[in-house]
Figure 1 (tube, rainbow, N blue to C red):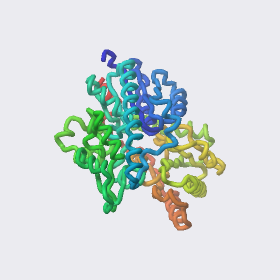
Figure 2 (tube, rainbow, N blue to C red):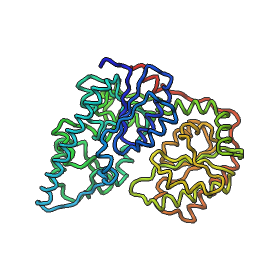
Figure 3 (cartoon, rainbow, N blue to C red):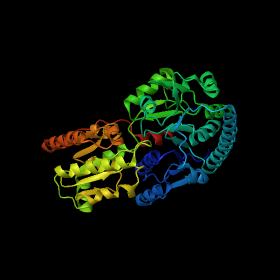
Figure 4 (cartoon, rainbow, N blue to C red):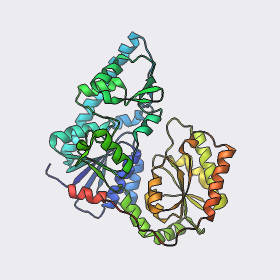
Length: 439
């Protein structure tokens, strides 16, 4: 590839897209670098386009990987499948239909990836993950042929335990149930695809799809962990670093696995160092008058959770916070729907922040968030006061007892004095500099 200054980023979700936009934002002053982001149908591409316009990043190009699938993707949940025993005729019919769908999808995906790589001539390909067996596999396939380095960016961490515990992940059946023929084949050809979780056996993806992908040259040796296919894996999470090293083996991970700052850490540091200026900007924009800058960082709603319960609990959280503080800034997860959350601003003192959390968290005096959120690492790193509630409490409407416990934490936070001097922050390798060195 002649052009060593093009960075091709493969975004399979809004979280991935947001992370890659952060990296492009960090490197906006590098005129010699061009960014191209390929978006899976799950990515809300209009939202990404709006963010690009706001940031003024004219050197970032968006590519819709499959416009046709974008229409139907939201109606189908390929990850939510449990084993259902069918008759032989129905099983054969499904096998025929799935074969046509998977084969045609893979052929179309390979052609699209080949055309993008040929046109953009990237010097490096950044991935959110290499174990998803989605659009990433097509780019990895050609990257290996053309000797283009692939790098997993440090955006997010989902542990094997968290993947197993989420009932919408993987192909699941009871341990006592007989395995379908396809699962027996997968167990033999790809034994690492199967794990146990409680009373269930879990295959990383639908066994039939695993077989078809294997036949077409898309094989992930250990799909439960990052690093099976990518040349380099970067992570900002020590626990993920240890998990990858344990799963892949020390020798396999040697020279390929790096503990760095996340793609957003540089922006967070910049905001932290300009804390006073950002607080003043937020106060002016949202007319904040309170002594503390309070940020409520809401996490993504999981697919199987009730929309009604989630929004109901968000309302309770905001109302409770405003009982103890004059104002609060609500930071929505990148996957959240602004329209369905805008009701929160009817509570006097609540403002939904337009800025991404990475840009304002350095100015926060108090952050309210769910315990399994990736926000925890930033809060601990910046040593910000916090109030934490259970992530899983959002799937059901909060009881009076749960609300009382939350308010007790808020009352305690009011009594906590914020440190007057900023702590010295421990820094790791800057991921932006890491990429520049590779280029």
